[in-house]
Length: 389
Image 1 (cartoon, rainbow, N blue to C red):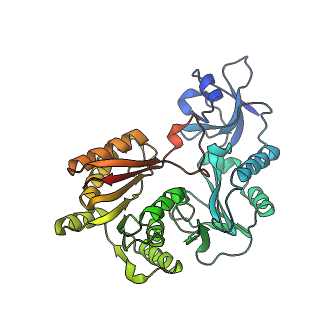
Image 2: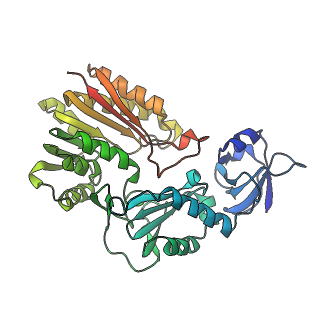
Image 3: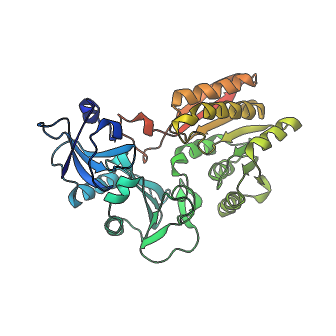
């Protein structure tokens, strides 16, 4: 295994569990992406970790092991997959068949994502070093042996590239699965992420619990996870708004799959910001408003603009929430901290001249673990407010 020397004193950080080394902290070596390397503090000292290397990316090393043996072999991979599977064994096949089996660094398998939708597993590799290191066919064989699945799909980071079946028969159309008894489908070959937003599972349950006898507005609804949850929670009526026609079609399909009354659901294809402006102008209000937009901060440079967008969204959603109503605000921007997001949301609510009580603050669910030393991986933020009368 090639040795790679540190140029910064990061020994403590590595031993505490931070799994990333950036290119300005190492002496670069000439090696292809995915090459296993030993991390050595300086010449003449012993290795302190092993990982996988990418010479072309600022994120140069993903650390895999911090104790010997250092080998990143089949035994190491299989042990990691087995431990990940044990962590998810509490999911009941009668209630939940969609979950994240492997969460990359959080399961000590850096850059490897595996999501399960009933009988289909979806593999996604996050970056050049994971793509060069992991053998997808071998992972697919392990999954087929150890899970009750019959097909494995690989998804790719390249925009517009469809997923490919790497084990089992062909896939035609969305894959049906359960989430806490709710019926959904995942577009495993073409949908966002690996086909569905599994990370909001716990928050959909909260919405279901609190929606009874309320009118609900679900903004950035995508395929309608929160809408269905509200409907099954006996909401009086649900408006689902998304700019993408295909998302609205999927939302309506999910509503019907769960045997909900079509008269209680209004799907709207529209820009959510424009929809809010029009709703404010005509004085429309709802008893529960949910806003779960796509990331506003794809990089650190966009952080300031993203916080301003979150403030504006909080202000406008507060204006269409009735007194005593509930306002749920979410962010999936990894470059925005939980504290900064909460401050932006509260500032927006105050700008709308509304008082509020914070009822809940949540992050990722149990099947999306992160290293304790890496708060930057805790991208999901979910806040629930009760707006004062």
